[in-house]
Amino acid sequence: MPRYYFQAMGIGAWVETWLDKRRNEALEKRDRELKEAERNKFNEENVRKIQLEFEWRLEETIYWREAYIYRHLMSKWFSGLIEKYRYDKSRSNKIRSDWLSYMSLLKQAGSLSFLSLHSSNEDKRNSYKQRKLEERKTYMATEEAFAAQIGKKAVETLQRVRESEHDAFDRSGKEIIAPNGYHYFCVSFDPYKEELRPREFTASPPTPK
Image (cartoon, rainbow, N blue to C red; front, side, top):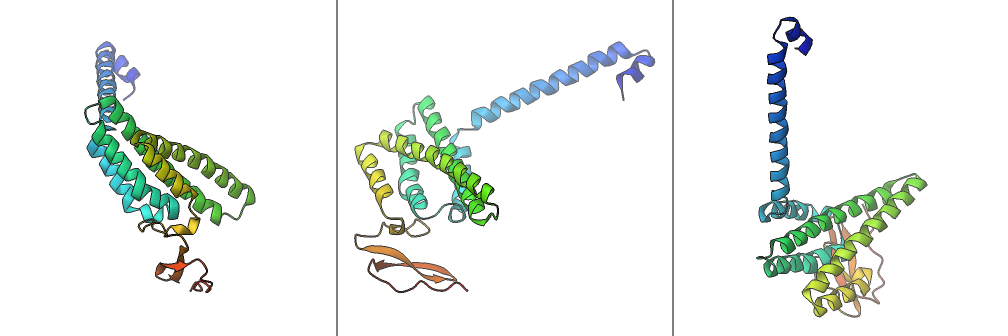
């Protein structure tokens, strides 16, 4: 009921005190919950949960080179860095923070790519493309930062992967990079299937059903 009702009944001061106390208790509880959530944000269990959810939908989110980098490089580098700095809470929290941002950026870039491809409005398509480029620039910086922390060989590997041809990677990113002279070639759309073929292979891809 409104406060003026209680004031009219002659118990306004008591109600005011009671309401203020309840409000302060609610604010303090909310503050404790926010602080607890912030403390738990970078703990191993929470990050692992988010990572598992991301990987469960990975093949709907990122493809080819990006999927390869995530599966074969970044996920391993993340695990290695967490192990390296397991006794350094500040460093490990920073790594987990960067890792959470990296997965989020990959997801956002994937969504923007989809929207760009399927939008019928040219201005929107261009906007989606520009935003995707910005997201890509940011998550690539995270890849470079992780590689630098791992070491020279990791930096060289990342550079080699980025310089490889787009079709040197299968759609899922699970397979090895295609050897020199070969590429992944789509042989079926339903179900989707790729095979390693010589680059001079000129047969037309299958017609979508």
